[in-house]
Length: 391
Length: 157
Ligand SMILES: NC(=O)c1ccc[n+]([C@@H]2O[C@H](COP(=O)([O-])OP(=O)(O)OC[C@H]3O[C@@H](n4cnc5c(N)ncnc54)[C@H](O)[C@@H]3O)[C@@H](O)[C@H]2O)c1
Ligand SMILES: [Zn+2]
Ligand SMILES: [Zn+2]
Image (tube, rainbow over all chains, first blue to last red; front, side):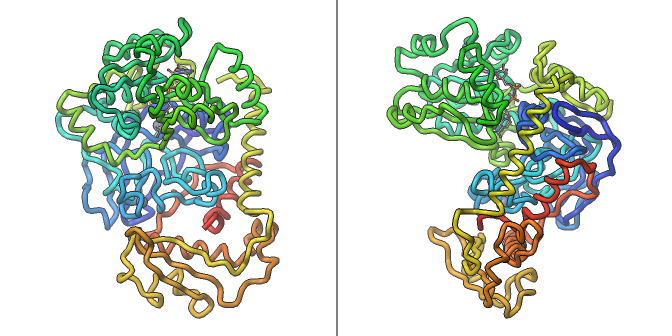
């Protein structure tokens, strides 16, 4: 079959690879209907997540049709239209049973790597390096889904493929930021990043009753899209002083909850950016935490900062003093998708949550390398390029 | 995607640095040599009443009398702690970095058996990596391949 493979830093190509096969009784094989580009992939492609091998298939946000089921699968049958969570959870370890699915104990086939990097291994994720499980990704004609009874969800009839697609990863990630960030009715929430993840975090904050939600980015099309489809206020961080602007809009308090949806390759115009970039390129720090720093400074005393953006290692000039002296709660997580996906599919079906606008481009697998290039450079208004192997 | 060669070099070097860091951490967890007689422990999400030391899944059963096994309830309803170690402690040099990179530390096999037993008790299976492989051999890839092969027997457990 055809698949999109990582070939080296900033090098993707479409290759012929062997079809996946059932490896465990609780697996299913899914025929891809659509997959999409995620900001997390950019960190892989750029070489910031080092545990990739030439020929690794990437992709982790997808929807498809079940074409083969293992003998122990109970909840799915051939023909089911399913959206699959990006992280694989076994459903029965302590973490899964406590709804902390991305921390699953049983789905990372290389636990020693994560344990050395972080002190403990994470659950496995599709197509996201040998440190994060070593599973094949979904930008292919077929993908094997382990523990499918827990990670694959039947798409309700009224929900189209494109709307369901984002419920795999970006929508639950955004929702988790608002939910575990503790957004309450009456809160003012600020969200850094207007990619799919940031937009969905802002939408979740609104649905959870926030009084005001303010989204921050620099890309005009994304700011406009967020204002129009998500309904939050926006700030262009290149046009103003974000901290001052947030103080002005929050009666001098600062936002109650700050959600960071930018990640390790954050951009900035300030002098710190050059410093961060040099240190990152020289590997004196692995990540550029510009937006995290800003969120910590802007957050009101006693507020919460939730980091959704992916970071891989160590950061520099981390304002720990602000965290302790302002009494902040700092939290982060990879997506606990299984916790939210059924509820999110219902909300999409009920029309409360629009996701289809995120699909700015639709391409075939052959065009996927070009689509990633466009997504990386945010050109042509690209927010999420949908890759359809059937095209 | 055109990348300036220096950037590519940096990124490749970065991958390498991180990989070496992980190998070192995997192989040398502290300044002190590892205590070869320390218990290896996992917690399984099963009630203490569900498990018996002599009826644990095959990967551990296969060790027979060569290991000691201890079961105890985990605090706060977190399941059951399973602790194992070799009755006859392996020689101290088996904990050396070299032995661990070549896969000659017998505790790697025991650690793997313990993880597999946990997975079998919790889920009824041991999740296997995808096959056949889609990757091609490159120097960086070989290093990651080595780490992946060692990774299931290494770790902080
Ligand atoms: N926690 C999880 O499970 C999870 C899941 C999916 C994605 N992610 C992460 O979330 C982040 C966002 O993902 P995405 O798919 O929306 O990516 P994206 O690349 O589409 O969007 C990132 C946005 O951040 C903006 N940005 C850059 N620097 C900024 C700054 N200093 N201040 C404000 N905005 C800035 C960019 O202009 C861009 O619009 C990534 O780091 C990704 O890895 C995490
Ligand atoms: Zn993602
Ligand atoms: Zn689990």
